[in-house]
Length: 309
Image (cartoon, rainbow, N blue to C red; front, top):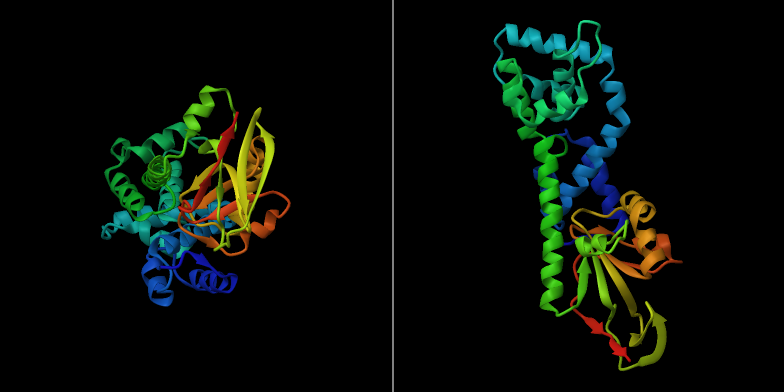
Protein backbone atom coordinates (compact mmCIF):
# COMPACT_ATOMS: atom_id res chain seq x y z
CA UNK A 1 0.00 0.00 0.00
CA UNK A 2 1.25 3.47 -0.88
CA UNK A 3 2.12 5.76 2.01
CA UNK A 4 4.05 8.50 0.20
CA UNK A 5 1.46 10.18 -1.99
CA UNK A 6 1.50 12.91 -4.61
CA UNK A 7 0.07 16.36 -4.00
CA UNK A 8 -2.58 15.67 -6.62
CA UNK A 9 -3.74 12.48 -4.91
CA UNK A 10 -3.70 14.20 -1.53
CA UNK A 11 -5.80 17.08 -2.83
CA UNK A 12 -8.30 14.63 -4.30
CA UNK A 13 -8.39 12.73 -1.02
CA UNK A 14 -9.15 15.89 0.97
CA UNK A 15 -11.92 16.83 -1.45
CA UNK A 16 -13.54 13.45 -0.83
CA UNK A 17 -13.12 13.74 2.94
CA UNK A 18 -14.86 17.14 2.99
CA UNK A 19 -17.92 15.71 1.22
CA UNK A 20 -18.44 12.82 3.65
CA UNK A 21 -20.10 12.88 7.11
CA UNK A 22 -17.86 12.92 10.18
CA UNK A 23 -18.30 9.31 11.19
CA UNK A 24 -17.49 6.12 9.25
CA UNK A 25 -15.65 7.92 6.45
CA UNK A 26 -12.69 5.53 6.22
CA UNK A 27 -14.75 2.65 4.78
CA UNK A 28 -15.93 4.83 1.90
CA UNK A 29 -12.46 6.25 1.31
CA UNK A 30 -10.99 2.74 1.10
CA UNK A 31 -13.17 2.11 -1.95
CA UNK A 32 -12.25 5.45 -3.53
CA UNK A 33 -8.51 5.16 -2.82
CA UNK A 34 -7.67 1.44 -2.69
CA UNK A 35 -3.97 2.19 -3.25
CA UNK A 36 -3.68 3.95 0.13
CA UNK A 37 -3.25 2.12 3.42
CA UNK A 38 -6.01 2.17 6.02
CA UNK A 39 -3.66 3.82 8.54
CA UNK A 40 -2.92 6.62 6.08
CA UNK A 41 -6.62 7.21 5.45
CA UNK A 42 -7.41 7.21 9.18
CA UNK A 43 -4.70 9.78 9.85
CA UNK A 44 -5.82 12.09 7.04
CA UNK A 45 -9.42 11.90 8.26
CA UNK A 46 -8.36 12.60 11.84
CA UNK A 47 -6.25 15.60 10.89
CA UNK A 48 -8.97 17.07 8.70
CA UNK A 49 -11.49 16.62 11.51
CA UNK A 50 -9.26 18.40 14.02
CA UNK A 51 -8.72 21.31 11.66
CA UNK A 52 -12.43 21.63 11.00
CA UNK A 53 -13.17 21.58 14.74
CA UNK A 54 -10.62 24.34 15.37
CA UNK A 55 -12.47 26.50 12.88
CA UNK A 56 -16.04 25.75 13.97
CA UNK A 57 -15.90 24.72 17.64
CA UNK A 58 -16.27 28.25 18.99
CA UNK A 59 -19.29 28.98 16.80
CA UNK A 60 -20.97 25.65 17.59
CA UNK A 61 -20.47 25.87 21.36
CA UNK A 62 -21.72 29.36 22.18
CA UNK A 63 -24.04 29.49 25.20
CA UNK A 64 -27.01 30.01 22.89
CA UNK A 65 -26.12 27.08 20.63
CA UNK A 66 -25.52 24.74 23.58
CA UNK A 67 -28.82 25.77 25.16
CA UNK A 68 -30.66 24.76 22.00
CA UNK A 69 -28.85 21.41 21.91
CA UNK A 70 -29.52 20.79 25.60
CA UNK A 71 -33.24 21.43 25.21
CA UNK A 72 -33.39 19.09 22.23
CA UNK A 73 -31.57 16.45 24.27
CA UNK A 74 -33.85 16.75 27.32
CA UNK A 75 -36.95 16.71 25.10
CA UNK A 76 -35.72 13.53 23.42
CA UNK A 77 -35.12 11.93 26.81
CA UNK A 78 -38.62 12.90 27.99
CA UNK A 79 -40.05 11.31 24.83
CA UNK A 80 -38.12 8.09 25.55
CA UNK A 81 -36.23 8.12 22.26
CA UNK A 82 -33.85 5.23 21.71
CA UNK A 83 -30.24 5.62 22.96
CA UNK A 84 -27.80 7.49 20.76
CA UNK A 85 -29.52 10.87 21.05
CA UNK A 86 -26.28 12.81 21.42
CA UNK A 87 -24.66 10.93 18.57
CA UNK A 88 -27.53 11.87 16.29
CA UNK A 89 -27.29 15.49 17.41
CA UNK A 90 -23.58 15.31 16.67
CA UNK A 91 -24.23 14.17 13.11
CA UNK A 92 -26.74 16.97 12.59
CA UNK A 93 -24.70 19.82 14.03
CA UNK A 94 -21.13 19.07 12.96
CA UNK A 95 -19.60 18.64 16.42
CA UNK A 96 -17.80 15.39 17.08
CA UNK A 97 -19.63 13.15 19.60
CA UNK A 98 -17.15 13.71 22.45
CA UNK A 99 -17.09 17.49 22.03
CA UNK A 100 -20.89 17.60 21.94
CA UNK A 101 -21.14 15.42 25.04
CA UNK A 102 -18.70 17.69 26.86
CA UNK A 103 -20.84 20.74 26.04
CA UNK A 104 -23.99 18.98 27.25
CA UNK A 105 -22.25 17.98 30.51
CA UNK A 106 -21.14 21.57 31.04
CA UNK A 107 -24.73 22.72 30.56
CA UNK A 108 -26.09 19.99 32.83
CA UNK A 109 -23.76 21.04 35.65
CA UNK A 110 -24.18 24.73 34.98
CA UNK A 111 -24.46 26.79 38.18
CA UNK A 112 -27.50 28.85 39.13
CA UNK A 113 -25.76 32.02 37.97
CA UNK A 114 -25.17 30.33 34.60
CA UNK A 115 -21.41 30.01 35.07
CA UNK A 116 -19.80 26.85 33.76
CA UNK A 117 -18.64 24.09 36.13
CA UNK A 118 -14.93 23.66 36.83
CA UNK A 119 -12.95 22.21 33.93
CA UNK A 120 -11.47 19.59 36.25
CA UNK A 121 -14.94 18.35 37.14
CA UNK A 122 -15.97 18.08 33.49
CA UNK A 123 -12.74 16.29 32.55
CA UNK A 124 -13.20 13.86 35.44
CA UNK A 125 -16.76 13.07 34.34
CA UNK A 126 -15.62 12.55 30.76
CA UNK A 127 -12.98 10.08 31.94
CA UNK A 128 -15.38 8.23 34.21
CA UNK A 129 -18.98 8.56 33.01
CA UNK A 130 -20.19 6.48 35.96
CA UNK A 131 -19.70 9.59 38.11
CA UNK A 132 -22.30 11.57 36.13
CA UNK A 133 -25.35 12.03 38.38
CA UNK A 134 -27.88 11.47 35.58
CA UNK A 135 -28.18 7.89 34.33
CA UNK A 136 -29.30 8.79 30.81
CA UNK A 137 -26.61 11.43 30.36
CA UNK A 138 -23.98 9.03 31.66
CA UNK A 139 -24.95 6.39 29.10
CA UNK A 140 -25.28 8.89 26.25
CA UNK A 141 -21.84 10.31 27.04
CA UNK A 142 -20.37 6.81 27.15
CA UNK A 143 -21.76 6.07 23.69
CA UNK A 144 -20.29 9.33 22.37
CA UNK A 145 -16.82 8.46 23.67
CA UNK A 146 -16.97 5.05 22.00
CA UNK A 147 -18.00 6.60 18.67
CA UNK A 148 -15.41 9.43 18.63
CA UNK A 149 -12.03 8.52 17.14
CA UNK A 150 -10.59 12.02 17.45
CA UNK A 151 -11.63 13.54 20.79
CA UNK A 152 -12.26 12.37 24.33
CA UNK A 153 -10.22 10.29 26.81
CA UNK A 154 -10.54 7.04 24.84
CA UNK A 155 -9.31 8.66 21.62
CA UNK A 156 -6.47 10.43 23.44
CA UNK A 157 -5.36 7.25 25.20
CA UNK A 158 -5.39 5.41 21.87
CA UNK A 159 -3.25 8.09 20.19
CA UNK A 160 -0.73 8.08 23.03
CA UNK A 161 -0.57 4.30 22.97
CA UNK A 162 0.03 4.19 19.20
CA UNK A 163 2.68 6.92 19.43
CA UNK A 164 4.54 5.03 22.15
CA UNK A 165 4.18 1.75 20.24
CA UNK A 166 6.01 3.22 17.25
CA UNK A 167 8.71 4.75 19.43
CA UNK A 168 9.37 1.29 20.87
CA UNK A 169 9.32 -0.16 17.36
CA UNK A 170 11.96 2.37 16.30
CA UNK A 171 14.17 1.50 19.27
CA UNK A 172 13.86 -2.23 18.55
CA UNK A 173 14.75 -1.75 14.88
CA UNK A 174 17.80 0.35 15.79
CA UNK A 175 18.93 -2.28 18.30
CA UNK A 176 18.48 -4.98 15.67
CA UNK A 177 20.73 -2.96 13.37
CA UNK A 178 23.22 -2.57 16.26
CA UNK A 179 22.97 1.19 16.23
CA UNK A 180 24.11 2.89 19.44
CA UNK A 181 21.66 5.55 20.60
CA UNK A 182 20.12 7.45 23.49
CA UNK A 183 16.36 7.76 23.72
CA UNK A 184 14.25 10.64 25.03
CA UNK A 185 14.35 9.58 28.69
CA UNK A 186 18.16 9.34 28.62
CA UNK A 187 18.46 12.83 27.17
CA UNK A 188 16.15 14.36 29.77
CA UNK A 189 18.26 12.85 32.55
CA UNK A 190 21.23 14.60 30.97
CA UNK A 191 19.38 17.91 31.27
CA UNK A 192 18.15 18.53 27.72
CA UNK A 193 14.83 20.36 27.60
CA UNK A 194 13.72 19.75 23.99
CA UNK A 195 14.74 16.26 22.97
CA UNK A 196 14.22 14.10 19.87
CA UNK A 197 12.99 10.55 20.34
CA UNK A 198 16.39 9.18 19.35
CA UNK A 199 19.88 10.74 19.56
CA UNK A 200 22.46 8.66 17.73
CA UNK A 201 25.67 8.38 19.74
CA UNK A 202 27.61 8.04 16.48
CA UNK A 203 26.02 9.63 13.41
CA UNK A 204 24.72 7.37 10.69
CA UNK A 205 24.97 7.91 6.95
CA UNK A 206 22.27 6.66 4.62
CA UNK A 207 22.16 5.83 0.94
CA UNK A 208 19.18 7.70 -0.44
CA UNK A 209 19.27 6.22 -3.94
CA UNK A 210 21.04 3.42 -5.74
CA UNK A 211 24.62 4.63 -5.97
CA UNK A 212 27.77 3.68 -7.78
CA UNK A 213 31.08 2.86 -6.14
CA UNK A 214 31.93 6.50 -5.61
CA UNK A 215 32.75 7.81 -2.14
CA UNK A 216 34.28 10.95 -0.73
CA UNK A 217 36.21 10.59 2.55
CA UNK A 218 36.76 13.54 4.79
CA UNK A 219 37.03 14.53 8.46
CA UNK A 220 34.92 16.79 10.61
CA UNK A 221 34.79 17.75 14.24
CA UNK A 222 31.46 16.87 15.90
CA UNK A 223 30.67 16.82 19.61
CA UNK A 224 34.39 17.08 20.42
CA UNK A 225 35.14 13.87 18.53
CA UNK A 226 36.78 13.37 15.15
CA UNK A 227 34.61 11.08 13.11
CA UNK A 228 35.60 9.56 9.85
CA UNK A 229 32.69 8.92 7.56
CA UNK A 230 31.73 8.39 3.97
CA UNK A 231 29.18 10.55 2.22
CA UNK A 232 27.67 8.72 -0.69
CA UNK A 233 26.39 10.41 -3.82
CA UNK A 234 22.90 11.61 -2.86
CA UNK A 235 23.65 10.52 0.72
CA UNK A 236 23.37 12.33 4.04
CA UNK A 237 24.45 12.02 7.68
CA UNK A 238 21.86 12.02 10.47
CA UNK A 239 22.39 12.67 14.19
CA UNK A 240 18.88 12.22 15.54
CA UNK A 241 15.52 10.61 14.69
CA UNK A 242 12.01 11.80 15.53
CA UNK A 243 9.12 9.29 15.41
CA UNK A 244 5.66 10.51 14.37
CA UNK A 245 2.83 7.96 14.32
CA UNK A 246 0.75 10.02 11.92
CA UNK A 247 0.55 11.32 8.36
CA UNK A 248 2.75 14.22 7.34
CA UNK A 249 1.24 16.95 5.19
CA UNK A 250 2.57 20.49 4.75
CA UNK A 251 0.63 22.03 7.64
CA UNK A 252 1.56 19.24 10.05
CA UNK A 253 5.22 19.33 9.02
CA UNK A 254 5.52 23.11 9.25
CA UNK A 255 4.09 22.93 12.75
CA UNK A 256 6.64 20.35 13.84
CA UNK A 257 9.46 22.28 12.19
CA UNK A 258 8.58 25.35 14.23
CA UNK A 259 7.87 23.59 17.53
CA UNK A 260 10.45 20.79 17.52
CA UNK A 261 12.53 19.91 14.48
CA UNK A 262 14.40 23.19 13.99
CA UNK A 263 15.38 23.09 17.68
CA UNK A 264 16.84 19.62 17.20
CA UNK A 265 18.64 20.76 14.05
CA UNK A 266 20.14 23.76 15.82
CA UNK A 267 21.37 21.64 18.73
CA UNK A 268 22.34 18.35 17.12
CA UNK A 269 22.67 18.99 13.38
CA UNK A 270 20.99 17.07 10.52
CA UNK A 271 18.37 14.50 11.42
CA UNK A 272 15.50 12.32 10.28
CA UNK A 273 11.74 12.46 10.96
CA UNK A 274 9.69 9.33 10.34
CA UNK A 275 6.01 9.75 9.49
CA UNK A 276 5.01 6.12 9.97
CA UNK A 277 1.64 6.50 8.24
CA UNK A 278 3.01 8.30 5.21
CA UNK A 279 3.46 11.83 3.95
CA UNK A 280 2.93 14.09 0.96
CA UNK A 281 5.85 14.01 -1.46
CA UNK A 282 8.37 16.88 -1.64
CA UNK A 283 7.97 17.92 2.02
CA UNK A 284 11.75 18.26 2.29
CA UNK A 285 11.61 21.24 -0.09
CA UNK A 286 10.06 23.26 2.74
CA UNK A 287 13.38 23.33 4.58
CA UNK A 288 16.01 23.08 1.85
CA UNK A 289 18.43 25.19 3.90
CA UNK A 290 18.33 22.73 6.80
CA UNK A 291 18.90 19.03 6.31
CA UNK A 292 16.04 17.09 7.87
CA UNK A 293 15.26 13.91 5.99
CA UNK A 294 11.70 12.56 5.83
CA UNK A 295 10.82 8.86 5.54
CA UNK A 296 7.90 6.57 6.32
CA UNK A 297 10.07 3.88 7.95
CA UNK A 298 13.55 3.43 9.34
CA UNK A 299 15.92 3.06 6.35
CA UNK A 300 17.71 -0.26 6.42
CA UNK A 301 20.52 0.79 4.06
CA UNK A 302 22.59 2.66 6.64
CA UNK A 303 26.32 3.35 6.57
CA UNK A 304 27.99 3.33 9.97
CA UNK A 305 30.67 5.80 10.98
CA UNK A 306 34.08 4.89 12.29
CA UNK A 307 35.30 6.85 15.28
CA UNK A 308 38.73 8.25 14.69
CA UNK A 309 40.79 8.48 17.86
